[in-house]
Length: 71
Ligand SMILES: [Zn+2]
Image 1 (cartoon, rainbow, N blue to C red):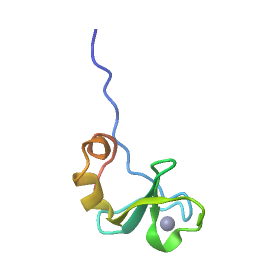
Image 2: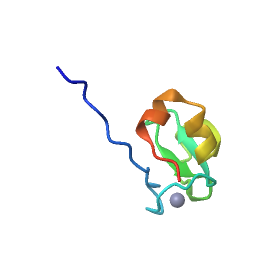
Image 3: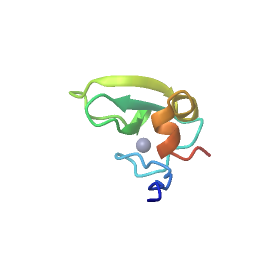
């Protein structure tokens, strides 16, 4: 009966494999909803949904707030 509790994670950039920090400039792609560092980005064919500081993007979006830790 208990609600499943999701453990929050600190997302890892798929390009450089470094964790996202709150002041990192990142982008979110439309297709996978993945975070990638702006400077690491190398998948030019994927449409971008959002670019900004990781911490600000997460705090502005309830879905991300539930999923991601911000340090
Ligand atoms: Zn990166």
